[in-house]
Image 1 (cartoon, one colour):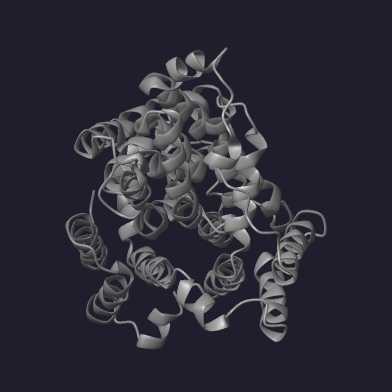
Image 2 (cartoon, rainbow, N blue to C red):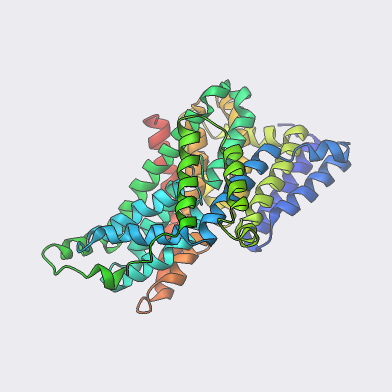
Length: 433
């Protein structure tokens, strides 16, 4: 296979950035822009303005609008109280608490904050309660991280917005009409929920969750006030915040309005009526992730123009067919994501390959390929090298052996690259979900 000099240069640049992201914590979005400028100017003869056209303006605006709105809900205490009231639904039934936590993390992630924010919010509470009622820390981590990553592809959540933004850009190549993008987004979200739920509930039962639940039958009821004290009632501003979140969900799901535009409108109302401290809200936004995703998108755009993306597609196509491609993508994205950013590096790198891969292997379902990339990249995030796994280790109860927990999560996370490949192959290649 002949590879042009610009294509080779773009692939080498991407490879260097991926390697750096695996061993050093830094915002690779900045590196991505610098690499795009270097490859574009030196090897492709592009002007700076032409290179900067690769900045995904639409995706950037949606991310800013949505993350600001939910940062307001976070800094004014709304999400914390909502979570506390939800945990109390268990009342005296101990066995329900892990299940409630799974659905609570799922709900909180789905409505907008995203997987990292919801885990940061709920892992300290969930792991502390697990320690009090005897749930193994490894088992509880499975549920918290699995729920967060399963719901991460909600059209309201940052990771889902990133995925859907990239999908919208390549929709014409895939023959996907604009009016079907919303239903496609929910299908990708559903696929993630199903696969992550099956794998991580399996992990929960495997690492002591099932044995613990059996012990609870016939046991003495707990005092929910000791486990999860009743919080203060919602304030007027917090009720207004909840109303804003409900309005966002209704307007996007039922009225089909643009999620970014609605979020900016609600965020502006929050500002005008001082629903939350806007300075704290802006500071709480995930600016690092936003810059990382958009910066890498600039490099991927240059790669596409230089022919590097097509060359990578052909390499993957050599070892794949329309059925096995799902497992191959699940494995490759899992391996890279174990050491790199799932949404900041892996998704912007692999999702744009979908149209080319379908053409190269002679067929394939675009939703299946998209789901394989997204799920493969996120199944490994239980690893302690990921933010989610690290949050759970940091929040584990004092009596837990954190060195052992670290080792077990590392082994589990790395094994997910293989498990992800098998699950994606079966779910999307064989069963065609």
